Amino acid sequence: MSRVCELTHRTDRAASTVVGYVVALAVSALFLTALTVSLGGLTETHTERMITDQLTVVGETTAGELERVDRLARLAEADRAETEVHAETTALVARTSVELPTQIGGHAYSITVTTDAVIVRSSRPVLTVSVVHRSRVTVGERTVRGGPVAVTYRPDPHDPTAGRIVVQEQ
Image (cartoon, rainbow, N blue to C red; front, top):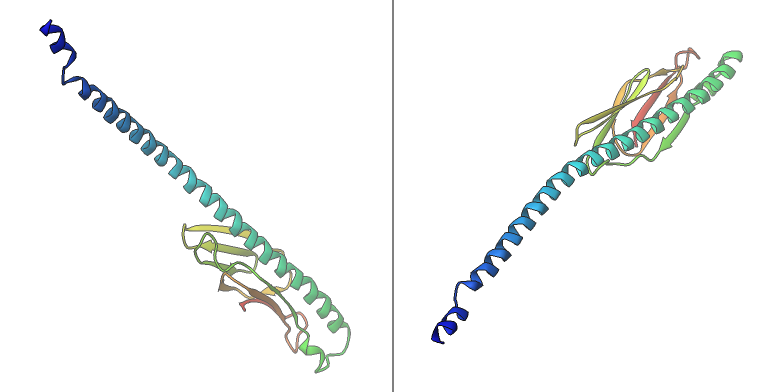
């Protein structure tokens, strides 16, 4: 009978519980690491897509304002060209302002206006979006920081066809 008691009081049985627990923890840690790595890439792709969409909206908004000032300037200059040029009519100015975000994705960005496009660039991640505008009046090329901007038509006091549209920070 003493043999039976010895077999039921073995001390190595508790080790299998500890080993099972450690293996379960290791498998769980590997699973969580793999999940984190795969979701990290997905999040980065989603962030870039979101920033690209926001840059596109800023570019389209700026291009729309350029085209709106272009229409106003052409109307004003058409009236001015038909009448005699007076000192008070040379002060005609078309101006709009738009509240653009100061940051996109938590980082600064810039808006470059050229004669035929609005180019919006983010600093982090480095992304560029170009939006074409159809302004018939000359557009002054300029780069401004993101944030509130003003789009202004500046007429030439001597030539109704030589005015220019300028984008500037507010």
